Image (cartoon, rainbow, N blue to C red):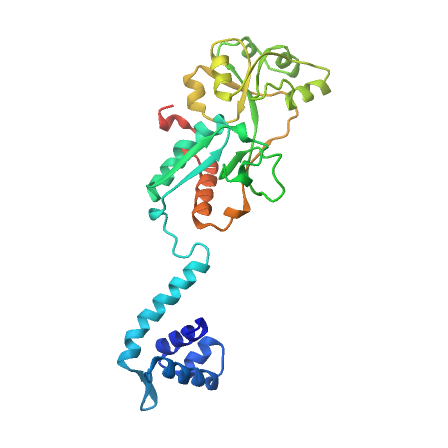
Length: 306
């Protein structure tokens, strides 16, 4: 029996009327009547019989009604992305490539959200060592989160928000003795952050336009190590505005606006189109986006004991 016959059988058994079944199927009463005749021959049962002005199902039709409906719902679930998806039954590990600065703010919120809905889902966070490569295409990374660039042409992206860079130094740093302008900012010794050891970036280009140059006294591979170094020295580092304020305060650090004309950072996430319609992957991406846009404490990480 083909699928169209099953759908016609379902309509006839639900409506107990050739006319109403025809309307439901978008066909004529005559065509629905011919289909009922085919179904009677296939099943070996009248299915619907006359009772006054209407029709009533036979005992066999009553038996078939729920079975056919369930069969069609199951078939639709196979073909329709997300139909019947329930994260509580999901057993899967998702990999997210991101910086440590984003990770420490988002990981707690993300894992709490996931645990509440999908207790068998785990998250593996990977450093940006795979950035700029085919990791998404190869399936080694599920989602890349950060300032996106060097992506394969087929990669899908979603813009999440914009972030502003600020300077950060220990609370007793001489910079805070008076107003921090571009010249005083450039005169301080700085910490560069680059996993590849790069020394120049947007800060340096903006300073060069003003005829200024800063000294990078140290280059470290992560934001976390930069904050630790700034805590224990007179070096100036960079971080994100309103990001981990409780942690910075606990470390004895203080932020300040960078006195340069800098564009905000566009934060987004990227994934391979093979996962675009997958209900589990889409569910995970939605939770990751929500963790970025509304992390716990609404911008104050003190609620996590940081």
